[in-house]
Length: 128
Image (cartoon, rainbow, N blue to C red; front, side):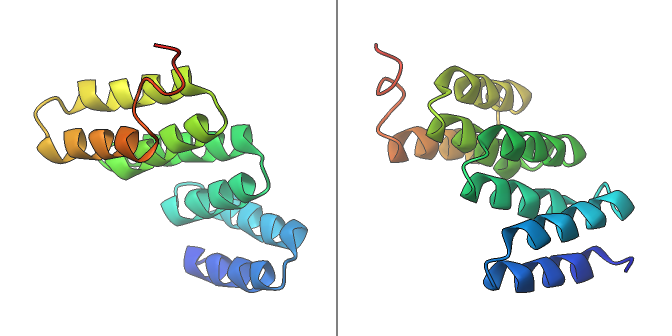
């Protein structure tokens, strides 16, 4: 197979069958041939996150962020992975990087505000 969407469809079929090992194999094979495909990185990140493998999920989301730096959603997702793993300093760093990269982007500011609002605010886990 060459096309990323073929790998994504096959991985989705294995995931529906709850075959996590085979799903991961397919996604990694897809990335070997299509290392710059955002969908494959995001799918592998989601799979790892669903298995509680936060660091591996974060690695894939970081790659997606590097491949598509204009997509703030990738960084918001990465921050969410860190936050949910109680790595709030890393989450804040990702969000601060995003705000610094796009200081005049109202949509980004809104996304960051929504991120904190949905998680109970920035003070919730900081001890402040």
